[in-house]
Image 1 (spheres, rainbow, N blue to C red):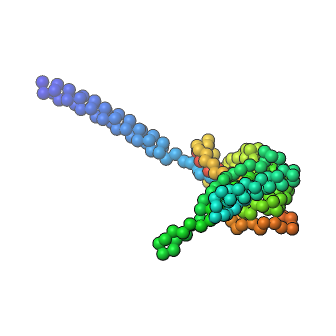
Image 2: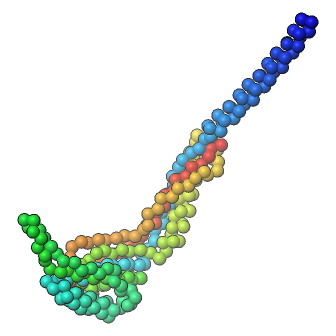
Image 3: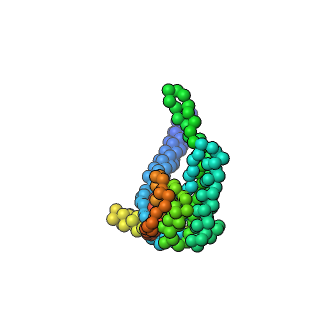
Length: 244
């Protein structure tokens, strides 16, 4: 009887040992699979694409600023002068719908002396925006407006109506540039480039802006030289690729 029990015990022990070994083998494979998954290889590169387009649109912002002890007089003088500026620009060939009011403001100057507030003149500002599809006329627009009474210049911005097409072209060039860099680096490292994992784009809108905070002279006898130049559309992409 003791021999029979010993044999049964040995068989059970052997079965448990086999089961334990199987579980250990399964666990070992599972851990190694997880290790391989965690150790996936990838490469991060960046690519830039730039396209130059000629400026074919200009936006000019200037203003008529008046001051007077009377707010009514300040507003009246400003309205008359602004009307003269509009009329002069129209006569110079700028369409009515290309001359718009950008901002209108009335405020009173004030100062403090020995803790006491002193009220000054009322100021009225009428900001005018002029648009033209011929950037070469930007200088003429400024001259005409100044001679008619505009006395403050805000900015002039040049842009292109081909920006959307140029942006698509710049994006294509940036992606190609990134792919070429990734391929070169992968081959040099003895690896093979896999599928792309992610793409992040950095893009700054093109356009050159000139700003001037000083007041303009009331009139001049010379032509203001304005050179629009070209706009550069630039796109940078950061790409992550798998490595095989």
